[in-house]
Image (cartoon, rainbow, N blue to C red; front, side, top):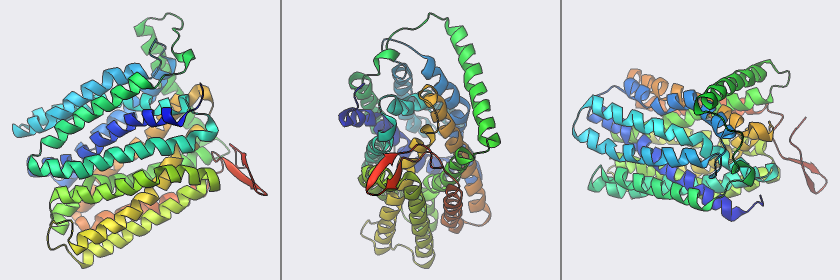
Length: 440
């Protein structure tokens, strides 16, 4: 299939819709849990790992299952068609469940929503390398992350306006937009012809059984290779991914709580401040992919980690030395946070856009879905650790630990990245750039 940027932009609507859902979820669910159900920060952190638990358990399996799927729609779209509408419905019901102040009903709703989101996340991510040649994957990942940034931006900025009107409105709007966005993907992004031709007839039970053995067997073998291989690049890129997602997810989960309970401003203003990260991420996602293609993914990721670490450290000192006088966006302290977070979003784009291409360029075309699942296994494992660990620090010491906690893990990721030797795409030879999947 011919590579087209227009097709990648359309595929980006899938990331756009998913990003809206997760941005709203991470911004407001912790507040609901603490305000309505009086949960501690540690318990709130455990609840916020439900999506990551599903991801760790299901994404390797679903990535491998979608690799084997053959339908007239393709191998990824059936999962989008099943998962997206169901997740949208459950997401829209979250504020309804909160209104009843029934914890069992609320938890049941968010558990189902997280399950259905997991159902199509790995297939939609693996869709990108299906239609993108290896040497274009950083640029393509920049495009789809740009679209994800637009979604997060809409969630944080538009969500503040809607949330201030009624806390349910962002959930209703987010569900509708996510559903429409994924419909665009299904209708206008064709899968390669070889995946739209029915393969050998096989029963569903046999397919699930074989895929389960294949996916978890493959994950086991991949993990064995990761730790047993003499060449440790895959181990160190996955360890780096784990570390920087521990850092980022801790801030993403608790920053609205930090804004409300530590800075003394409204949670919607805290969400708006996080939206500035999404704004700069969106603006710099495509340049970050181009930069990774120009100077190398490893150098770009390392520079991004150093930048975002510096931003978190400066934000910590700002929050400890001064407090906003109001929740207004024009408050001087709020404005300073937003300026810092703008640069933080640039650093995060440099990291996030170039990481998945490094992982998938360490494998073959046949294992793209499996390695996508491996990438998500480590990122979601980090997200299992981050909320309860950060929440425990918040309970024991206080909110002043949130940003230094993130700084430590970002810097550790920068260190482990220096041991990665594969997965990059450029080496200078005079003024020429050559494709080199192996940096040794």
